[in-house]
Length: 172
Image (cartoon, rainbow, N blue to C red; front, side):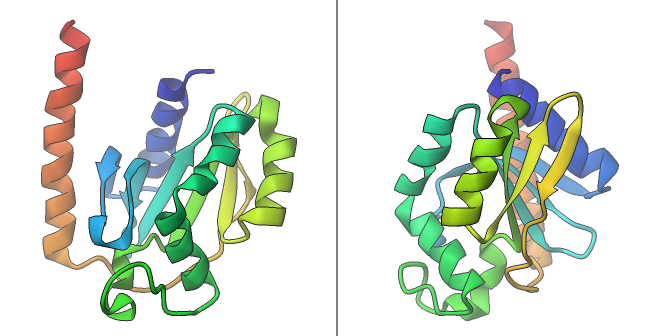
């Protein structure tokens, strides 16, 4: 299964099944928190940020640990500790860290991915696509800070630029 297929199913899940008013892909979010580009992000009706990181192989999943700043922020937020490698005042800007973080993998690697997440990434949930998208492990809620309205608009503006860029790729 291709990453593009899984990205589509993740976007569809957040927008139509979960009714998130704002969804995006290839999101360049929270540079001050140590984030690199996220595969899929969404902002819920309640204003909470969710992230879905797509992994098509176990090697890709294991290599994700190399995003040290990102995972330190998620891990320390999960442990209710101040993420020292994130921002000057991380607790006042926790909305920049996803309230829930998921991995999405194809069914062929689901069992091994679930084992890895249980042992190494306890703050992550697991979504699996086989004949449909299902949640194998629900992500714990890391915090309850709402994304401010001006930042929600910034998210939408950034996604309009992403749409134009991706449409340009289709023309080639």
